[in-house]
Image (cartoon, rainbow, N blue to C red; front, side, top):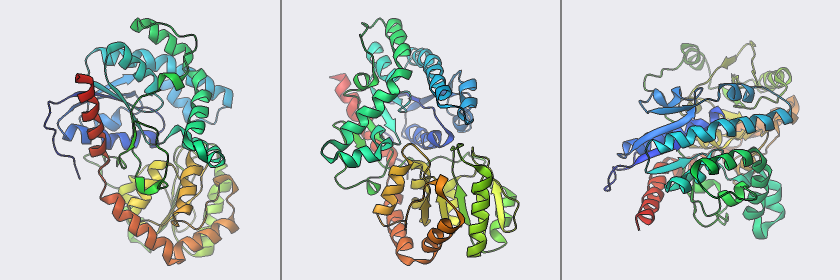
Length: 412
């Protein structure tokens, strides 16, 4: 379902995004939706992810982040991850400024790049909108639960203050380049204050009273776009056709997992249940050559999930939306960041019997939870009903409404 072309003149939209593979995927669908609506869309991302957009004919300005991208795929110490964050900021800020200065009417920014884009928007007098697939606050679900009176604000501020040190020096240099006055403290709480944000999240997955801050809007999920000439691997097609629908196992861009133990746990549990399995290798390099188990690389979830019996995954927002939209019964096994939040939502909505942290998975608890997921009808029925709601959503249309409103305010 594509949004209708705008009645207003086409805009030059600069869409800035970076992160993991899962972070990038929804932005391919958003970018194409904006282009199909008649706008001129230019992507700013790293060289690693440029092909995700150029394959669709979208122009890309590449940020020089090859080394930083490589480090993200490795289980490095926490201090090295923080240093990598500083390096990303130092390289991304000038690249974003150069791209915006070449000509844009509005900037749309991934949360990791939003602080720079907000400051660039201020300096160049360009409207800027955050386009997120997760709220900062969702990375601290326990804090949200412990402070219900201000659950979003407190957790949101805490996460931003934790991330701020990675941005401070680059924001100062960016201020100097833009001729903006220096601040004594340039944390991202202040930088992002008052910025409009669109969330590529279905409201059907959020609590009915979820406290969205003023100017923040849930638009519905942005479904990733498949490459135009994409065809499924013959191995996958042959495996699917050779027997009953398998169970999918995948943990996306999570690499801090014991690959051998987790792979063996999956094999033992599926053997106990007498079900077949597809294991997506991911950044953890999971694999198995056991009978009735197929190890695969990347495969579009919107194609694969309707063909599997259930999905066991890390509960990242993209994978969660994809499995539910495909009406695939889901068992969440979160690892870190916002994944425990989405896992908790799956159980709270009655879509999954339980959530088991990936590092605590063993043959017994995985077998028991997966048996309930497969055999108990309520989980399947509730997932199917929610799937209909998600299929009716057009997340890009929601972004276009906010873009239109923002441009109208900017013109007056």
